[in-house]
Image (cartoon, rainbow, N blue to C red; front, side):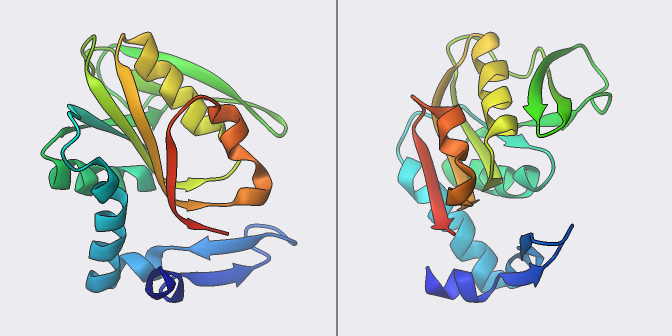
Length: 171
């Protein structure tokens, strides 16, 4: 995993003072690093009966689609409000100051399907918890929630209590 860490650029004071930003674009542009990160995210689920990978906007689309391909599963996006063209289901979650919402097509997931939720980063856990709620609200079973990076100090796992949460890199 050190090889992956070395491919992630650290940017201090972005997007505001006191924040250390982990820029994964440097990892994604490297074919060896990108392949290794997708393999590390997919490998715990090889052989599992996963029907669909759900990726969270926006970098979850990149990793989720690649993981779905590795697992032989379908892919469905969870998007910001107003980005999906068909009838949707919405989940609202808390931000530090206010709320935000995510949507999924209501026909994206069938009842009793086995779903893996994928995103690049687990920080506070709000978007992931909202996504899990959307998936379960459509009658599906969440078999796991997979992240490339976890910012442990932000406590995002608390909002995902009871879920099978895996991360490749923890900071």
